[in-house]
Length: 235
Image (cartoon, rainbow, N blue to C red):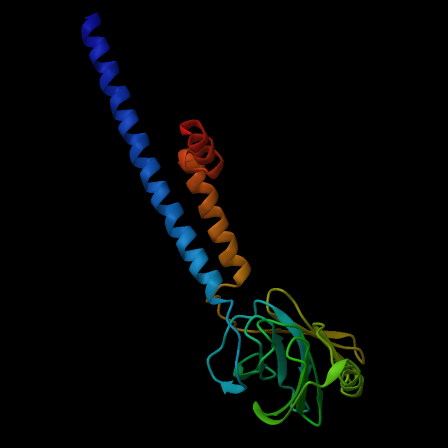
């Protein structure tokens, strides 16, 4: 009877051991997939726009960089990660977008005058004017003083609040534009139907970081500090 019980215990322990090994390998595979997926995604965000162009495929607003509204109620929202401005109608429907070089996600500010978008960039030290998404003027190496003059003249900003007349527009992290009318105190909410994919560089980085942590927790023998100690012990 005792021998039979020992046999059962051994089988149970063997089953548990195999199960743990399988789970470890599955989780290791998941960790490697997360590391590769996050790493490739993060690297894909490191590129830079080389020229100005208009586009009709909407991108996520991962890095909001300013807001403006024209005379027809169209909403212009800056997006730092894609180095662009995306345009929505007064109901929140995407119309088009236009991009311009900022030096790889560099800072830019923009303002609107006579329904034309005026933009200054920091890294590329440039000045652009767009009319309905089409580039109509550009100037390079404008210098710090000229940049400041343009910002003042066209009321440029990188803030996510814009005021015109009695209305103030504010965009939240949830891609909702709040329109407050100070004349009557009413607040209107405009929901932007913004896609989630592709993820932001920050999200890709976190996925890769979590994958790396999981891999080394599951496989401590590959941890750099342990590998170095092992090499020293062999010398």
